[in-house]
Length: 360
Ligand code: 2U9
Image (cartoon, rainbow, N blue to C red):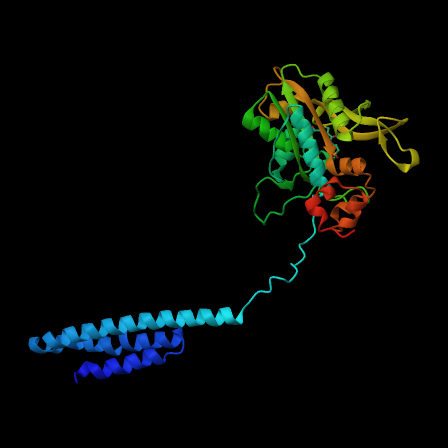
């Protein structure tokens, strides 16, 4: 019997006896690892005479190959056995009912934003977006709101904290989406027709104000755009949004720093029986602000006010949603309970795929 035979028998027996892949790996390391027994024998070849090496060398190589092959076969066998054990132990009852999916629907503010975007798209306006954290230059100065303007006061605007010694100009949470349109004119020039929907922030919280709300503003700049164009665009918008043919708008003179002249716009309505009806009755409801863009604002955006002019308007999306769907309290928008949405007859809840998940 040759010297390697004892080693061979021992390791083949250990491989056969290994109960799992970890035990098998321990056998492999003991035999063929860097400090393993077979590796040690192979290192010993160097000290042998050429004649001894001639017989011991091939014998050791054959031993290494045989153990490697036996390890591979054992690994496959143990792997199969482990899988079979898992298959036997784990099984799925396909007859069990599925886990109920979380209920959800489109938020009214998202739905109204989509409606507004679609209507203005039909009127030739594209959507512009921009950052919610703005420099005070884009949020205020470019919009003709000088440093002493009351809206710039700490108690109306959220200022971003600066670490001590950081003397860069302040950044704010944008208080309107107007800076988006300044950026749009800078980047794309004029003529332009854009709307800028999005979140805005003001330090205000009561029954009719939340610190974050949603606005959509519009801007149309060209060589000869007038307030007549503004009036037509707003009438078309109101007709489509409130789904009434006979809308009537009243323009009341007002003042905004970024428009001149400026007008607040009321829509004819009735509150008969406590329910809002647009386009009929003797009441007027304020729905938006508007005006001709101030020449200083055009100049701040790099547009020559001698050659270009146009209108701008702004409205609150949350308020539009409340008016259209008869939602009385702004705080409903921050409530995740679907019952009130159903109560106000939200169209999105009528999508059949959503209805299955909503208990009646
Ligand atoms: C540029 C120039 C002018 C946007 C305008 C209003 C009037 C306005 C309010 C409505 C309700 C804000 O959400 S609200 O509180 N907005 O009355 N917004 S004109 O004027 C612009 C915008 C961009 C470059």
